[in-house]
Image 1 (cartoon, rainbow, N blue to C red):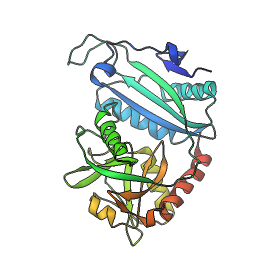
Image 2 (cartoon, helix red, strand yellow):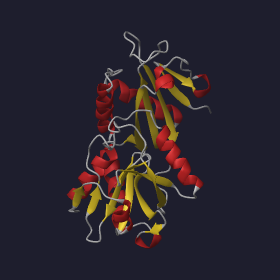
Image 3 (cartoon, one colour):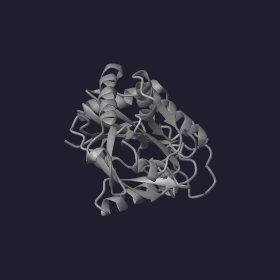
Length: 281
């Protein structure tokens, strides 16, 4: 059965889904997006994702395309039509269709596209191996735009080296993974993650995991860290809506926690899943 997607008010088979070649999302990457996880047919951190969507739109001078409740109903309809019990819903909002011009157009309708992807969140986590890469992205990484080419290049380069992902580095410090927030765990058991600035995306999964970590009496320090410090850590991990808490077992050829997932990362992943099942909507 063909996947059903949502395009500008209509649910259509993916083969029939079309966006204009003059859409500014295509011409200028003038668009933002969100991705919300689905676990056991329920959405995790939905309101957090919608709040970040509103902020991203506002930072680019764009209006919300519809209400939170209307967006939720479309999310629900999509997973129902596609039989998604475990996976994600992607939502993209562009400034709309206009003749090519660097100036923002006025009075044009936004383009809204949504689609699903099935994923397996409950499978065994063996950990990922990462390499460092220069962070060449734009300076407003706190806005979740569709400008993902630099991150795609870094991840592809890592794959060509036989690794799973890249950790991006700017001015000597780790910013993020290509699509995740990054963490290390010191030898004393303290979780260290980069503080929120324009240099990184304010991850919704990040916020939930840090809240849960604090509730379970884990010590947290928000500050930049280097690759060298990460290589000396007891363990490391990343968080994102598409991977939850994922252990990192190697950084630039240096194995962490004996090359196996660390206990704190695995514990946090389990806690996040348990709480997500309770709080999902």
